[in-house]
Length: 88
Image 1 (cartoon, rainbow, N blue to C red):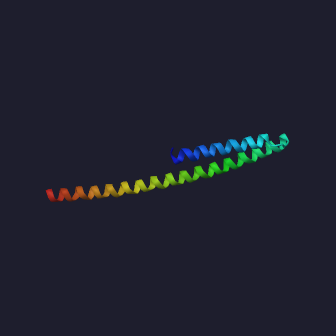
Image 2 (cartoon, helix red, strand yellow; image 1 turned 30 degrees about the vertical axis):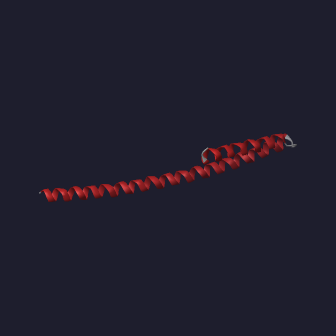
């Protein structure tokens, strides 16, 4: 089992356990709905932060790849230019 699958399973299990605990707790419906709303807001904020973090990392990777490709193209053009000079 991969670590990623284990972590995903753990997170899903924790979420299911938390929801079951809230729904089975001896509270009024209004309190339960309020707690569920707060949990949903918290999850939405954490998810948004994680998505932004992943997006930034992806943007950084794309930027790095673009820089490297420009360097490679420049070196290839230099090599082609030198080859043409030696052939001339």
